[in-house]
Image 1 (cartoon, rainbow, N blue to C red):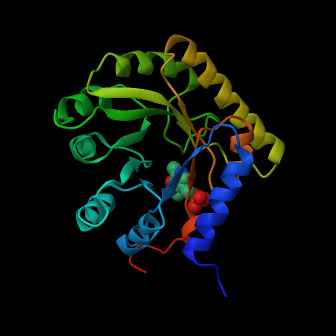
Image 2: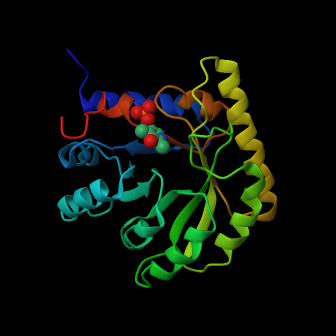
Image 3: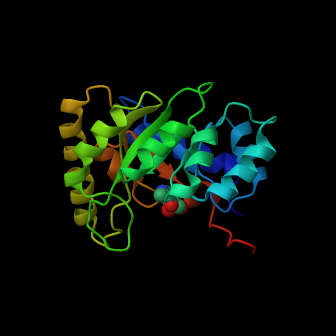
Length: 229
Ligand SMILES: *Cc1c(COP(=O)(O)O)cnc(C)c1O
């Protein structure tokens, strides 16, 4: 018999507390490709923070869950195209994937006055992979300054999806590099508090290296359903 969502969430929260006992890390439940019903089930078990990769898919779930799950915190963790900035600014609480200056003014312009500032993480391509979005480590400081200059945005820290190195030591090194970059940024922006790194396979390693937020999909919801399948 497979474990229920309730068992998996309990196990995850226990592993999280064991790996980061002092300051509890935030668990982002990655619900991409999962139906709204799965989000509602996790919500009923106490989970409040959810991560989505695709804007349209997320908006459909938001609409469906608005009344049943009023205080979900929605994070966009997938790449952002500039033509989606308005929808993201209007509907998400956090954007974890800001990686170029062009998006900043658009997000600020469209963030409704009635909402708190959009919480923003800069996505860093730490292993310099061609296929991945994310800025280079050298670009972080300038992006941070541009975000901090916008009252409708609030810089919270960094996010990254390191290369899934087969060797544990290499993964650890990528996480450590990110932590270093975060600490460096925090000297200029003392208010930042979030380092989002680590997924189902390696979140404990990420926590060991100083992650404050982990993004977990398959270890919580099970293997992803294919879109349309
Ligand atoms: C899908 C995804 C995750 C979760 O991955 P799992 O391996 O299923 O835990 C985390 N972060 C991002 C950016 C993702 O796209």
